[in-house]
Length: 98
Length: 431
Ligand SMILES: Cc1cc2nc3c(=O)[nH]c(=O)nc-3n(C[C@H](O)[C@H](O)[C@H](O)COP(=O)(O)OP(=O)(O)OC[C@H]3O[C@@H](n4cnc5c(N)ncnc54)[C@H](O)[C@@H]3O)c2cc1C
Ligand code: SF4
Ligand code: SF4
Image (tube, helix red, strand yellow):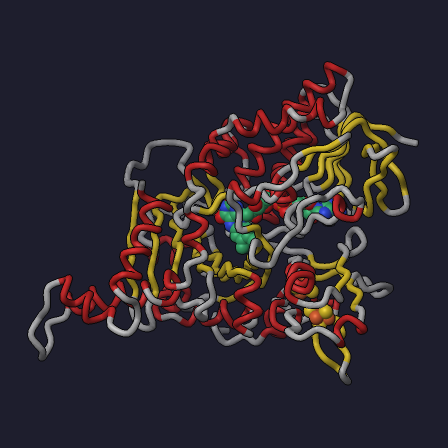
């Protein structure tokens, strides 16, 4: 595969995750999203975790790279709808190179 | 309830260093790390600058899992179809340690944690610290996975995503999207000898580092390309607010950077083996966060410590230096049997005495420069255009440099503006 032609899904598919099937480490408060003008979460996430489905902002938390960007972007450029906590110990992304 | 002398939250460079130094001095230390193994959550470029490391971990280069010694640093300006490259090489092969080494954090961090364990610290990986425990406004321990652990002092070494202090109501400083960048990165596999040859290295122990300006979607930020043994680390670091204003997703910015012909030739034939991202503080002496309080210290990225002067991006060695300064203060506090904020204030004095801090002060004027958007989408293009004019023998009469510059500047930047910018660059980097 050439180094240039991968889609985001392909890229995420290369990474190793230990998915926590029981709980999401990301909560989104819809009432805040309703009054969020800029919706920075839809742009800044390197894994495109945030998507709008049926008018609601939802988080595909299993793709999260745990970079911490969304919380910062939402708090200062959005309406503070995100509560991001680290996944439970041992779950989530597991980089092999880092 | 279990009680330790010190609890360290996070086994990155900051946490591992604090644990190593405290354990070495005979304290009972536990390090709690949320990754299944240290480093499995961590992303850096990464260049590890040797000086500070060698002061704490003498001869680290003999046992640490390093990728290549960085014998060449280049700064490259990328225009649409041009590149202007300032390439510095240290051709003296003999001296060890080298100025910097490339590392991959998932491989390097376990080594640091091992140094702490060898010194007697206990490592508990695979546990997320959920909160700090307080009594009368003083931090007395932590809670992880439903269990409480107590200690005389807690070392908060959580990295950029640090949230424990804020949740405990102890954080007085707030993060802003303009003070933090996002770094996205591909690790690209190529055969060891291809890398050695392509980057004009003598052998597989030598490597180079490119810092690039321009061709990042017009977003304030920069790109990097570092050589590892049999992989390349290729990424961009861009200001978070600039990213969401641009409406360009981070991986699209990275793709644009990689598609530049200068970069695409360097990574040609490679295969991406990992995609990663991590928020990173913009750094600078003006953004240093809170360093200590009653019963706790904050070290490394959790205290927003980082130094970026365009030429070098230093977070790991800065983290190590801060952790060493904090450990010294903790050991003094132990002598007094007092871990109050007054007793721990020595940390700040110790840190301010380090060269790392002095460097942060020296480069304080570099930060306004990093906010100057012309640096990202006017000057890289201009540099290529002017040199292009001067090297090219074309159908039109040739021009001298200044005339070429005046012509190429037209419509892009005024002379006045450029003089102001030169002054800013001068203040930030030269004088
Ligand atoms: C793209 C990019 C490129 C970079 N390039 C370089 C470079 O070339 N050179 C350089 O020197 N620096 C570089 N840096 C900066 C460097 O990565 C950081 O400054 C450095 O990692 C800070 O070290 P730290 O120990 O403070 O934090 P971290 O390395 O982030 O370590 C924090 C640790 O704490 C753990 N943790 C967090 N929360 C909890 C919790 N609640 N419970 C338990 N454990 C927890 C994490 O899993 C992690 O292991 C780069 C950063 C980025 C993002
Ligand atoms: S940025 Fe925050 S508040 Fe705005 S839409 Fe996204 S999650 Fe909701
Ligand atoms: S932490 Fe990073 S990867 Fe995870 S959801 Fe937030 S922005 Fe996306």
